[in-house]
Image (cartoon, rainbow, N blue to C red):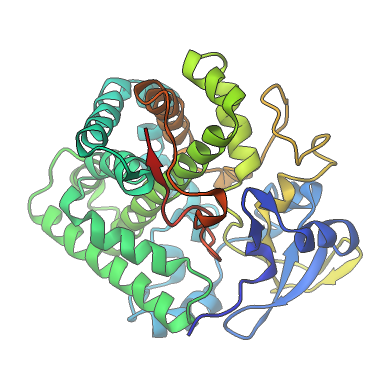
Amino acid sequence: MKQAAPIHLRRNRFAVSDQLLSLQSEKPVFPLVAPSGEKIWLVTGYDMIRHILSKPALFGNADRSFRQAKSGTAGGFFNSPPERNGNLVLCDPPDHGRLRRLIGTVFTVKRVQQMRPRIMEIISDSLDGMEAMGPPADLVQNFALPIPARIICELLGVPYEDRTAFQRRSLTRFDATLAMETRLAAEAASLKYMAELVARKRVSPDNTLLGSLIREHGDDLDDQEITGIGDLLLLGGHETTANMLALGSLFLLENVDHAEAVRSGDGIEKITEELLRYLSVVQCGVPRIARTDTVLGGQEIKAGDRLLCSLTSANHDETMTANPEDFDSTREASHLAFGHGIHYCIGAPLARLEMQLAYPALLTRFPDLRPAVPANQIRFRPSSVFYGLQELPVSW
């Protein structure tokens, strides 16, 4: 059964909902009831969210009671201690640092820049396919999804032909309109898929990231940890960037001055950064757990309380930057699109490069590209942790 979108996931096309902005100014720490029935605090102010994200000792990520309760519904996958699940975003120090160091070298700016020629090949292949198909075409299925999916599949060693299934599971996992049982079942299926892949690579490790982890660190990492790492990177590596490519392309098609700047190659880095802030595809991060009693925004927070940080709201807070509802590519602002602190998105350099290459390539290949349906018929995701488009029919 479909459920109404919670307040922190409501959007009006590109804009933040009026209800969320009202909370930001009137009740920056607001009590919500999670789908599980427990109370959780929604935090909407930029300064408070930066504070929470920068203090892992005060606001942790590892939530033993939550993960253990969840494991019973999610097929029992998390049957070892929660801190050993391999998912970086669910770990606290020192375990978080141990895991991040093992994969961090793959996503440095220098290493990612070495991937530039292959990324350009993948982008060109996708555009070739779309051009050969002819208009109209769905920009989500023919451009936004295949580019990051193919890149992360090659990096991890995931068969690209499995993309339809893992993309469908990803959509289900983060669709807040679906029952929690349905979403957890999709998570369990995702973990089962990755566990089976890891088991095959354990027998015959290749030169991909997953194979290298097994070959070089297989005595220190168990299969469950490698599965958690693989699931996180596969999910984050295609889902977030795909939504940025789709949403960003639509915004550029509707704003010809910015599209022309992208096409000319003028300031693509700054335009990409403003798109990240303005669109805020990752609407909230993993809930933080208060480790001690504290006060936030005049609200008493007890040890053990869970806090949900609205990155969308923070990126549209006037205390961070003036006129946040305007798109300004000259803006100098420390946005939170990739999070902040020790859990800052490890794949940020790769995501940035994909966008910086893909937007100009698309608009140069199809200079008269345009939506094939009226603006009011473009379907946005109604309620998802990852905001985006369901489809984007285009013509040229």
